[in-house]
Image 1 (spheres, rainbow, N blue to C red):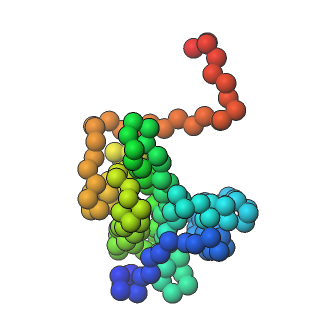
Image 2 (image 1 turned 45 degrees about the horizontal axis):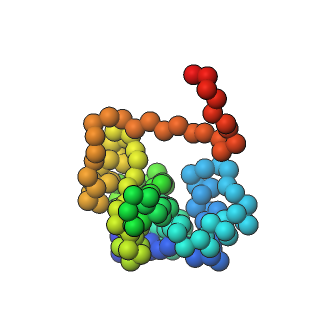
Length: 155
């Protein structure tokens, strides 16, 4: 059981690429090289937070600031939240999301949004707990396209 009082949640700084890599390896086998991670952390519009108990990573979340086109404002895309299996349903995910919400408020972000599937009940419960409001009744579908692809007229 994770005691929230011994949980440290903080944003990683530019000199913490090794901790970012450690956190990422808990959830994904492939991690970018140190130079790419340094660039990620050096960008002030990218926010990577970790939940630690002592030196042990229990979870991580990251988000990207996106300038709006239709009005002079910035939104934050909460891209991913992950918590190690044994620390789930103990407030770690909530602490990570709330840390990103505080960062967003401090940076003047006017909206935070996160895509998820309606079938992902744990994620939906997390975002509701953090004050989120669901939109629409459809499940979310994502398409991945390579930046070098050129669309053709053929359908």
